[in-house]
Length: 93
Image (cartoon, rainbow, N blue to C red; front, top):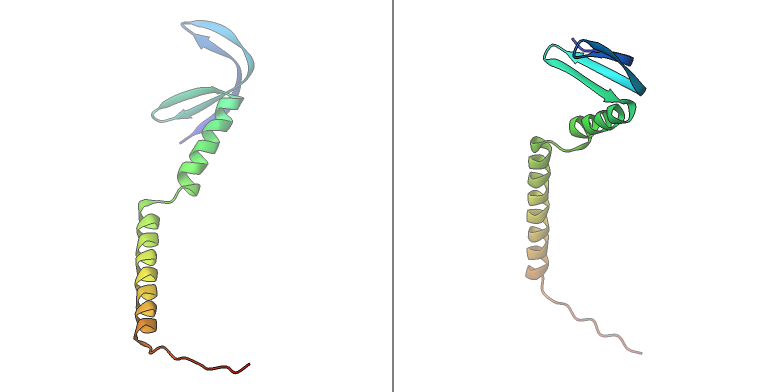
């Protein structure tokens, strides 16, 4: 379970401390993060890039396989052109 709440004060070493600006506390079963609003935005952007934007190993492997197949197809096509005889056409002007 994850809980997110905005904070303007916190208890530090048994004393309540007023925080300047907007702070966000993210609590999980493993611990808590206390971040400024800017840090929280950067964290969200980083998580989004990590989870959704960057290709996975499987995505990269699929891309490599597709590129290898394309190279093989182009090599086959090139071999086909090499086997055709060269034809000359005479044009009178």
